[in-house]
Every structure is written in C-alpha cells, then in structure tokens.
Length: 105
Image 1 (cartoon, one colour):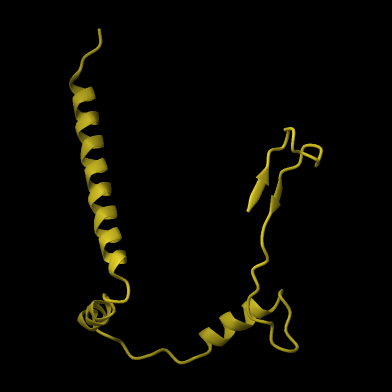
Image 2 (cartoon, rainbow, N blue to C red; image 1 turned 30 degrees about the vertical axis):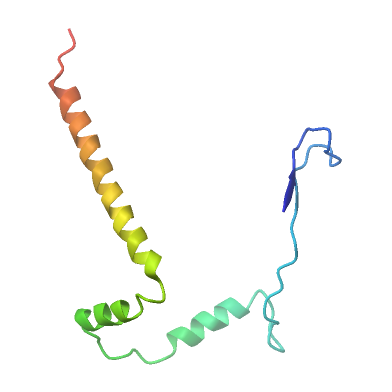
C-alpha cells in the first residue's frame, strides 16, 4: 500500500489523499443477492434458528481450554491487557489521592 501526502512533490491529486491498495478478492455473492441485502438476510437467518440449550459456564471454560493450542497468544494477550489496565488504574488512584492531600494556598 502506498500513501501519497496531500501536499507534496509526489502529489498529483491537487490536495486529496490517495491510497493505492492491492485488490483483495473474497467469495463471490450468491446468485440473486446484492451487497445491500446480504448482511440483513444473514442476520435474519441467524436469529430465526431456535435458541440452543443452556450450556454451563464450566463447559464453556472447558471448550476454551481445549482450543488453547490453536490460539496460544490470545490468553497471553488477555492476561497482559488486564494486568496493564489494573496497573494503570492503581497508578491513577495513587496520583489522585496524592494530589488531594496537597493544599494550595
């Protein structure tokens, strides 16, 4: 992908940002469908199926742990994300409390 600056020596677009992108072919639309209606039909088809029976939380955890070998970095990412979010929250609380103790005269 190549991005041309809007006002530069290479710009031949009179101020417009031009992005050249390689084509990314996907699956063909089924016969009789259009890009405007295919999403709505898929949503309707998904909602019209009967609701499956309730699955316990432990069963869901078991399925996730069985799939761990397929996506090993996902759990590492989630752990790091929550750890860093917690650290950020704690630091923010400490800063707010220390600023509240300072009395400006």
